[in-house]
Length: 465
Image (cartoon, rainbow, N blue to C red; front, side, top):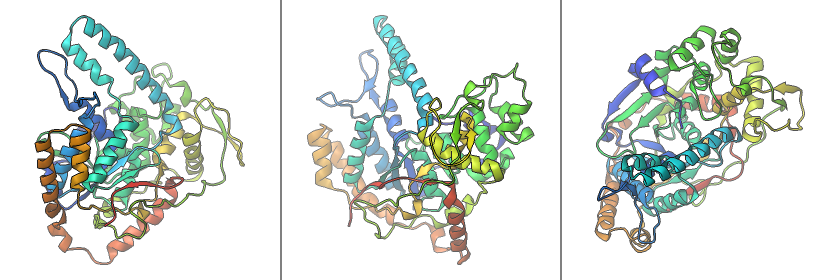
């Protein structure tokens, strides 16, 4: 989950890129929320325990876990009451290349299960808490629960074709949303203009905003070099080189420019290069990317008027994502993007037209960051509507056994938050002249070939007015 050590590296090398604000600072802003990450947070953080027993997730009388539902209900109300318009984006299918990371997580869960059993036998409460948190997993049921709750609350949601953070970043880059709220730092590798941390956390912790453009300037890197830096540091798509930490990774990328030249110059005796980084996977280079199917918007239909986003946000997203990726390297990325989504590292070559090319794992990882599978953000419109009060009471009180007084209090806050959402920011009254629309159009044209559009229909939540 995220890039290892990236937050500290940014704080050390590009401190001007990080600002702290109160949640109210984002009044009037539209924010894409990484729903899958938020659910995981709620399952970890919202727990109870008494009498010296280990803390456990909240459950109802039927034994169903409800931590994620309570967390989402309360945190969403907090955002709405602060004038924030959230759009929740859920993960779709994981890319095949992520299989190795998923296998590692499975191994860690098995180890945690063994350690938990041992801690229970020894009555070690602290260790039980630690290991039980490592066993938390947000699955399809938790996502379905949260989608239902959001619909009843009148808050829009979207299921990405693949990685939620990639879809969130795409929405931010064209100004559909102002920023992306997540704890997953690899959202920056997808070039989101702004990353917000602590938005879905409990308490009054300040929101940490990371400015992507200022981060690149502080690190002294292009977008392409930043992607290679993150792969060297360690990402979800492949193993990293043992012996290379965040600082040394930055030094190597700034000195040699990209991973290819780093591999040519580092000492193989000192650093252990993963076997899958060596050119061993043979695939055939596709002549072009596969055609994309336009997503349908349901139940919020195509053609519905979109709520105002943050049109000016796209100005900070004008990053040359193809810097350093011209010629053969760019063609390799196009091919790798297809392979990384469809071919596991140990699978044989796919039979497609074109010449045979070798595909190291880091090249496919790079491709997933440069050309993620997403729904076309320009075609996605969102609505925030009145909450379904009766439906919320039936779901939370009757079905899940939540406290009636707390639910009704939350619904009252939810209804009152509509006024805060409809308030405009002061800066929205001073919009720039027509030049901004030109920048937005140009940006969309630049980004069009840089992402594989999701196949099939986009899954949406929300209600029509």
